[in-house]
Amino acid sequence: MGIARTGAVALLGVEGHRVEVEAHVRGGRGSLNLVGLPDPALREARDRIRAAIINSGEYFPDGHITVSLSPASLPKRGSGFDLGIATAVLAANGQVPLDDIRGAVLIAELGLDGSARAVPGVLPAVLACRAAGVATVVVARGNATEAQQVPGMRVVAVSTLADLIARLRGEIREDTASTGTTDSIGCGAEGRAGCAPAPPAPSASASAATRVDLADVLGQELARNAMEIAAAGGHNVFLLGSPGAGKSLLAERLPTILPSLTTAESLEVSAIHSVAGALAPERPLVTEPPFRAPHHSATRAAVVGGGTTVLQPGAASLAHRGVLLMDEAPEFDSGILDALRQPLETGEIVVSRAAATARFPARFQLVLAANPCPCSQPGHLCTCPATVRRRYLARLSGPLLDRVDMKIEVVPATRAELLGSPAAAESSATVADRVAQARERAAERLRDTPWCVNAAVPGSELRRRFPLPGQATGVLSRALERGTISARGVDRITRVAWTVADLARRPHPTAEEVGFALALWSGTAR
Image 1: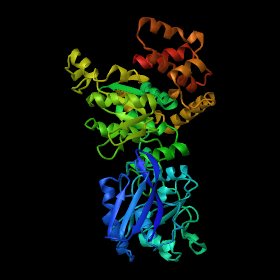
Image 2: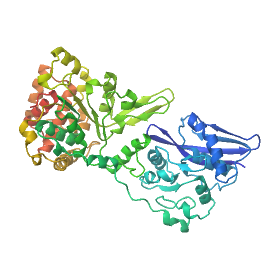
Image 3: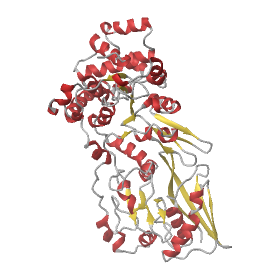
Image 4: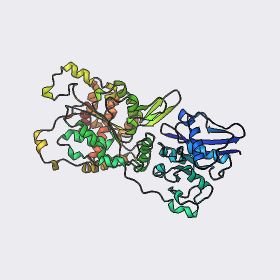
């Protein structure tokens, strides 16, 4: 009997922190005490671990067992510590070798029968292990494909606690071949045949994106152009129009013209979805920009993120590197809409509770869609007075709309457009090609900066590094004299002007691009 150490990971938001699991077995009355700020679900691990060890054919120590989770000040939540605790207890009792588990991290929930069960958040946990210099991770077989998405990590997949024990003892069993990327714990030459990584699975976002196409949108030349500009520069859009005009149709197709995620972005987005439990085992990696459209009855926690006991990402974080559509925007609670102002500026959401503070990435493109009045009737049938219309749209605060780069009035398609040939409408693939070329031009201009799209460039850097030519600033000067735009508005108009110039293959914006960008920002473009 003595002390044994294994590793686990505690998640705080989408950030993983390595935890050292220490087990000490000594004589006395049989008990298992957990210390180190465990939550109620983790405290229940005592009974699960006892049953899992006994039902795996192993001896559960009769003595007093103390399990310490370090650092003690870090909150630990969930059932992913089960496998690490059970292995540490067996090692402390001398039932499995100590050396084979030292330095490894074990992440899995244990069933009463000893089965290893998948848990959410494995991808960010493995990323945290790599950052901490951990070489080997043991996970449940259901999490193996997800864990293997992290390059440079050795992943051991086990189906049961007995599988892991057999490996640690050097026993060769046909049903315990690892699905990890390279050599694994207890995996000798005879066991390496099963160590090849599984082939990558198709992305859930990619499957969803193939079901819609921009060619489905008939007419709407200005709105389609605005969607192209938004995709090329990463801009936010406000769509105003009568019901059935095509606002939601346009917003749902914005992800189809965005570039695919880079490898780093894909891991970042997938980590958020993993924490939320939104990754399917057969589709462990999000490779296309995500799309989220919460209902207007959604709570603040569902949209922004939060919770009482476990801090979870909301729709804004699940739309990270993608599109967040707030359809029927005036129907949302004003506090929810104004809470989006922080991520629109900083690209992250900070959720603070008494026990902990979590940061969730939330760099999304916002699309607000609204009807002009609460009755939602077409123009000739609407009986809402002008005061009712103004009061309805006033639910969208000025500071929020000031952070939206383009305001577009979406008018219903004409009879000729509806009855014309669908082949006349450009497809998503055609528009996406122009968007990709525009982004390449922006990236080349921004190659010596931390940014890659125009919308991300701070206003101070925009004015210092990329000032507008003198002849192009006249229209902005006149608008400032009239007081129709703010300083933030000038920056956003300038960013849109650069994007319009990138799409037009021009080296810098001219007065024409700046004037068009001003009209898009003010909602007067026609």
